[in-house]
Image (cartoon, rainbow over the protein chains, first blue to last red):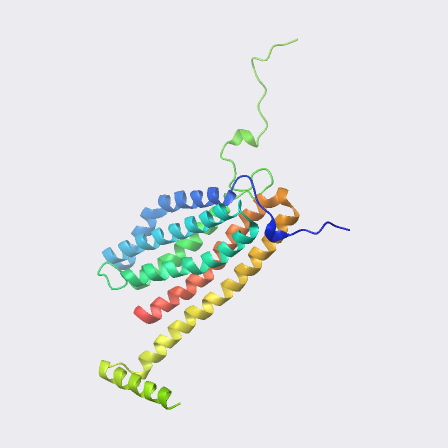
Length: 162
Length: 95
């Protein structure tokens, strides 16, 4: 007979892989920012470029907030993490809504470009990141960027001969 | 009932004064419904996903890192559905 487990009372210690993933997402987002802004500029000149940049900033903030909520609450309790994720989902959607409603009437905002850029950058960054996620027991977050960690070492030339 | 009827009449008079039509009202209602329904699905999905992940992490704490990574990516992908609903909302309402 298995021991009963209380999922909500458990606590997670150790590293937070979602933080490394979100940091990686932000890095890639900043790397792709010129392309996103250029796409917005092609779609709707200056307003399009500004809207695309704003959308990218919103998406990156959203990823960072999501990862931060999990990383802060997981070491306290899994029940709290669960609540934080669900209420965080509503809060983050509300935040995006408020941010868009605040800027919608400004002259530098193009609503179609803003909407399109939110979806394209969110999904595009996620699919891009999927290529670099290891999700293994050794590397729960992103893949290691040092090749010597995964490849066998070449034989040492200066090794003393017996 | 009489109070509701008065309220509706007052709203209709205010809408007529503001120059809005029934079509505008229906568009606003459609936009609201699109966002609302689009947010319900991902909420159910995220609830299910996080619940199962918490169960998995409690049963097998040594695999918690892997589960957390999968959970985070799952949440982000599920949230994209709500964002699509939100974009439909802003396009219907403001574009």
